Length: 452
Ligand code: UGA
Image 1 (cartoon, rainbow, N blue to C red):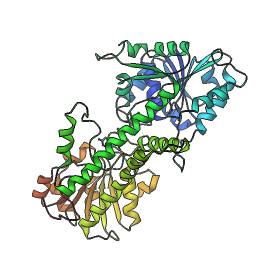
Image 2: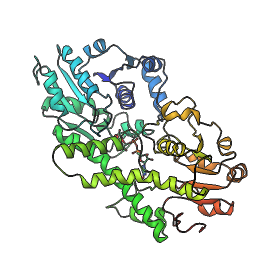
Image 3: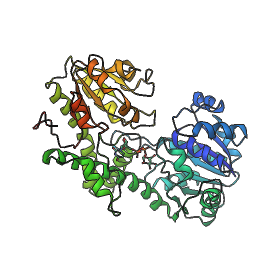
């Protein structure tokens, strides 16, 4: 089938486009970012994503994918138009739908031949009606177009794998023919062609509103688990328990499971926080009190204060004129994405209180302008810790566990570590002479200093 992906050079658009090309469709990714479009046509992916380079090269070579900035030319030839543009948070938390609206307005002139418009972007319930109203001016739903809500569940870093091995495919539409066509589009995945051996993929055929709520509820549930375990971690520090043991013990209960119970710095990235805020706003505007969701957000924001308090306690309370080394800037391991990174928020707070920050990440962020990160980026981890009063581990890159901590201790002005991702062995660090503090590991820096 011929598929156009609008927002095709963005994270979701690119992974979706390359995935659809790989399962046999002819895909054109359209995007306003001409630098990205040129890079992609030359086989260079702007996102760090396991497996994307190979799939991009393969499908460019066999002519199944191409990228363009020419919206009109791209959509004319396609039966399917995937909308994968951004829906960032506005200052009040509400999703900014301007890009979705703009796409719908541009599409309106291109409905001479019937198209199925597939909303991939995470949008509040009601957006489909808005898109329908825009497209419906002079055109008829069912004859000229149909709309499908098909939310994505890709995780950054493992997005390609998530595309080929989805836990479920959600198709929300009121049109029986659009449902059938969308099922056919995904048939190679659903029926097992082109994929490795795996259990059948559940296809959830539902209405549009439920499809959109499935996406919001899924992301906010993941956020809820993380905030829950972070709150338990705080309690563990008060009672001398180890949250990693608690998570492990809880996770074996099949009603609970192990995933998303890793205590740490809190959830960052472009999705969980944004969707949580949007759902809170949706609740508020519909006159419903989202008390639980608000607490999830509050707990997440408190994590930043908690780790900054830990480092202050270790170095004697004042950050002014102190040097703090930081390991990890990306919002999680395996990505070059700094959007809404909790690590960046911590760096901003440290600098705001007068500390000099030297931050290392395996990704080269020497040109990252966001929050002035380029000015504190240090390419070599050992250089980053030289002369530092404390080290904070803020992203869970596995590389950090493999470093030589004896050497790090010798390079630091004072050997203190706040391990906000619980990556290191506390006993080993104590044996090396570090004063060490993790998250929820039985050591409350404010009342039990010095305990192993
Ligand atoms: C998230 C969802 O997991 C995807 O299913 C969804 O498709 C995507 O958002 C989206 O809406 O586009 P992603 O933003 O890539 O994916 O990030 P996650 O892997 O879910 O991690 C989010 C944050 O939670 C990270 O900062 C991570 O470090 C943190 N986290 C995760 C924890 O602190 N503890 C955990 O146990 C798990």
